[in-house]
Image 1 (tube, rainbow, N blue to C red):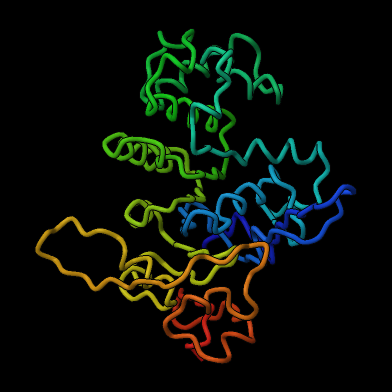
Image 2 (image 1 turned 30 degrees about the vertical axis):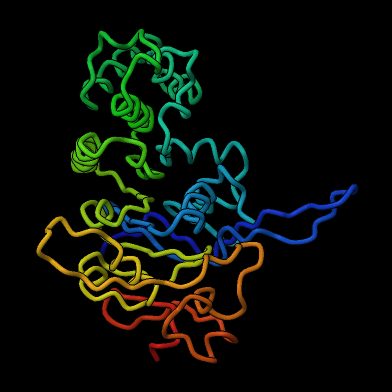
Length: 322
């Protein structure tokens, strides 16, 4: 049986809304609202949804880059949410992140050499000579030249900067990498190169990925299992093949109907959702999607659905399924 390297239980991340002279808390933005899932060792777990659905906040909350409000995150048998600062530093050798914008995530005042040496310096895992050797090795692993080590981030293209960010994430041989929309800021031709590089690194180093994206075609190409998020909640979770072949939740069906097909002769029925996405500061009672759902009925307005299994490896949070 495949080991679960990460278990997320009832994760909530709320941001307080402060108003008035005294900055009193008058409400909360519920960016992540009771999310639970597990990630198997060696797999790529995808999180997909519209902008603002909470997928990036969920990824950062798992690593405690953002402090979660409630819930439990267990990584490799250790409770991340209860860890002290020193314990968390040790854990982060095995938990890394690749951010969406490589230009913003790389220090413009540091050379590539210094950027790649920093993880070893912070964690005290290598001497000067060993650091230099490892940095050269990392550059070769991500397809860059060691002669570029003394350049600065602005001297590289977007794809090259993302390769540097991936090399930095790989420096300490992590088990888990959270990839937060790592290709959305890149040209399509460069996207494929980065995705192929990440797949090759996964095979070579036994990596586990949480891959966050809004592009359904990228998720389909890259991920093994997929969680669909809407307004801070997971509405469907399934293996990739059944999710794309037979989506069950009305929101997933609408998302997939909007994905373009690269064939001018294929006609696809488009599901048009009415209304706007509600504010996470004032989510609807019951099912968060009922205000836009074409199949909503009275129960949807009153009772929040929970994720339940409808088939092998397929879970959906919808009252349409008993």
